[in-house]
Length: 114
Image 1 (tube, rainbow, N blue to C red):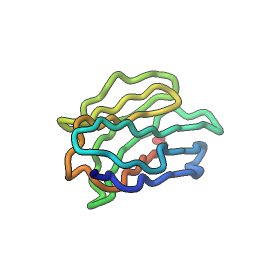
Image 2: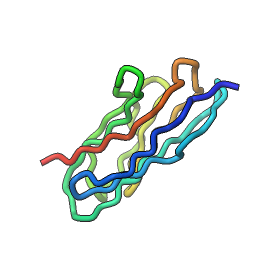
Image 3: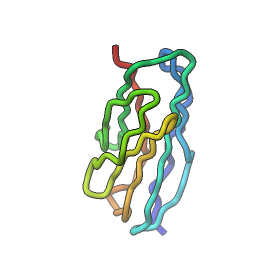
């Protein structure tokens, strides 16, 4: 069995937002498909934010997009085996056919844009 490792749960206030990442931890076998969710909960209205999924090893940005609060975004291709979807209030990073170099910690990073 091969593991992606521990996923970092991010729970904290980011300006007017609260971000929660799920699942907290999972083990994945090479070839599996994985879905990671990032919930963006608003305390105050926001107009535009930047959402990035980062693989902690090397702080490599795997996928990034700008989002509006109520506008769904169709699947955004990021890398050959990664897709990002925004279905308010959550973003999902899907990893298809996991490989050995996908192992590690993943972080959903959200930034309010002015």
